[in-house]
Image 1 (tube, helix red, strand yellow):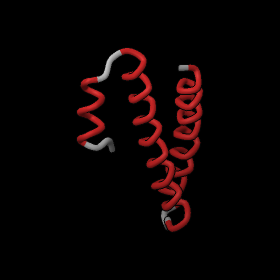
Image 2 (tube, helix red, strand yellow):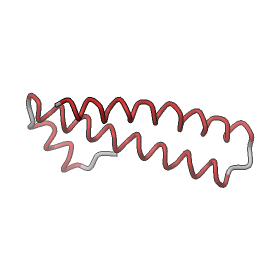
Image 3 (cartoon, rainbow, N blue to C red):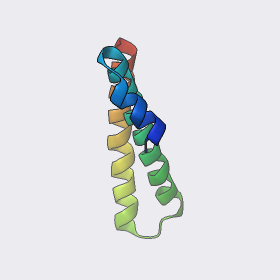
Image 4 (cartoon, rainbow, N blue to C red):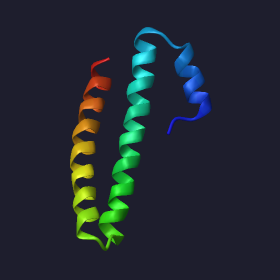
Length: 74
């Protein structure tokens, strides 16, 4: 989650600065999702939630790679 300060700065940003901030905040969100899913993979008991966690790691990692590529292109 973005902090109040990050959201305030984002609301005041424009152009490529806003794009960069957006991509960075989204990357943090995706990293957090991967971390939480990793915890379920490590400690989970339910096969259904473990499979969901695997799917989350796969999809979020792919999106994180896209975000990083977009950031590199700015």
